[in-house]
Image (cartoon, rainbow, N blue to C red; front, side, top):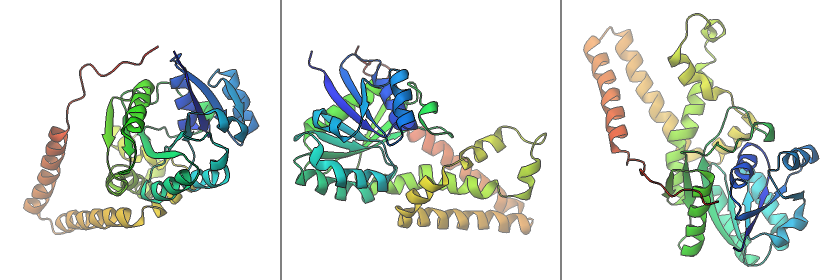
Length: 294
């Protein structure tokens, strides 16, 4: 069996977890690139990668995974596209796509490479290789944003990679639709959590809090530098979601302030019914999804 060589650029939480997950299969040769020598040393110690080094490893890779924040991913590609093996596939893991796909595709095409946008929907509150986990992607969704010119074989190859990581659901969409949905499913909850925990009461929640507090506040523990970048690269969609949330919060506040039980009950009912409708619209997970191959 011909093994595929994968170079993972950035061995933080996502890149490191990808390496550890793919290590469970014997079909890959894994290279790790990172600006931190300690991270590279730890990746070798944990046998997450077969080799660790710099851009010289790119010339041997069939697939290059840019596990970096958006701006760093594009900068790396601009500086190193010429060093990547001609004909190789390049993908990313960024949480925004419109700001990435067009420039990355142009850089790759100029270098004889194929780019396909990717976004594994997984994470933890704490980042870094020390928190990397081979099981991070188990049951997760993997989003792909190919362009009309992306070869079908490249899309199929990425689907196979996602299955090897342990992902249970694949979504193929456009960069614009990705960003519109991620503004709601990922970015808005971070905005909400960050605002929620700024209440003076947060400092005294112990003894008064349970699941509701944990659920709403969990994602306030962010890497603020990364998330500020993601928010600003998705301004239009995120602002629309924030505006909508503020309108709905105001309606609830108005009903409470007016003592309007009927209006408040209706608002709460609408929320419950929308949640039930949304959950019922989800397609079921496949009972026998494709297993990882050894």
